Image (tube, rainbow, N blue to C red; front, side, top):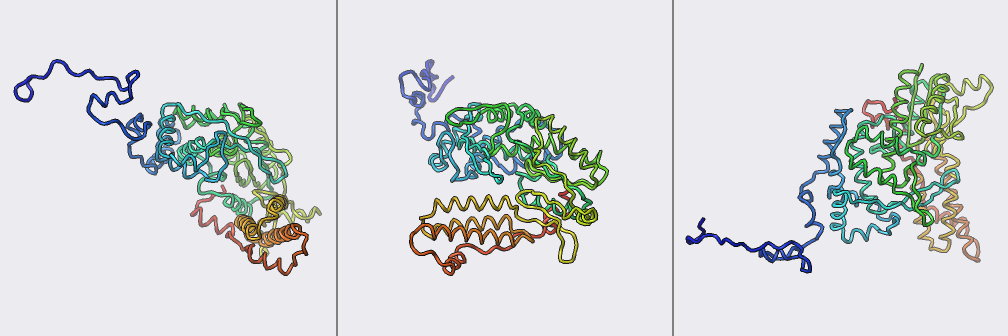
Length: 502
């Protein structure tokens, strides 16, 4: 074969040196090929063509949702590439709280973001080739409303990112399967949606008995074997299953020792609420939906928020049978009802008249999501569910404010006022529901009294007069106002004609 001016190609070609010859600089191949040395991130050079593909997160999740909605028996086999996509990891990073506590690795949000592109590329590479290893979570405790301590786990920053990305992808599947009476940790649903569902369900449907209950140590008693079986109903991607197992077996670091267990999921991780909902979906929700269709003689209303749930019954016989059956059902999956928090009470539009006829006094009340539910009446004399701030929740919050004011005793009044303004505003945004304005106002007044006591104790000078204190409180503590509509109004808007109660 001739080349150029009739000259044939040379029979001997230059020897191609290895990319990284022993004892040489890593640019030997570049020298032979006559191109400059590679520049840029070394991780990007190692990554395959997948890193440069255009990934549309919205379109990808829409396809997953449509498949999950249209094929209830479909199992998804290829999901990991949706999780390790750079675009999704980047969105998950920015969704993590910037002031969140650091995990066992000590990595902060700001420090990780200083070299964000390289860090996420390296994380994506480890996820793709199976080299990702989660860190043990750091144990922390927060105060509960009943005075106890709730154990939480603080994952490492990269674990938070991957868990959030995984929860977004898996949530697109399971949100199509979850039943309507499940409200906890679901997009587009809040605690107030669950509260409104209870109020409307009791007021509109034939409810005479309330079974108020929650699960004892739910997050600590989830059996990993059952959880994996439940997940495999929809997932056939072995790599994603392996990823979930890594988080379940990562362990907890407490007092310098790593504790590993075959039970429970750590509260605090982004993936834990979704796994809890999956577990209860198969262990409780599906069974409860079938039970009220097959065995109930009258109306049954069920509302569940995480491990706390309320069930309303028309007949007492149905309520007692449901209590026995649900206890047996939960026992199969290693769960149990909380004995002290499980009660069957007479509650509804006829409860007051029936108890008065028997000489038993006022109807009993029950607590749900921080509110005490009572049998009340409207101005026109019609029945309504009256929701008041739980006394236990109110006392717990005031004790927390008192302790915090002691720590801030010698801080400037402006700094104390900014903290208390945030506390009062947050309390009002949650508890300022119709007919609960008086108790929200009481909270503001008690906060003002605690603040006045703190200001008087921080100096040996003359006590602060109440006249001046009223001016300080009026300036810093906002006056409460009702922030939420009546339950029937909210449900009419959000359901668009489809019941969220039954």
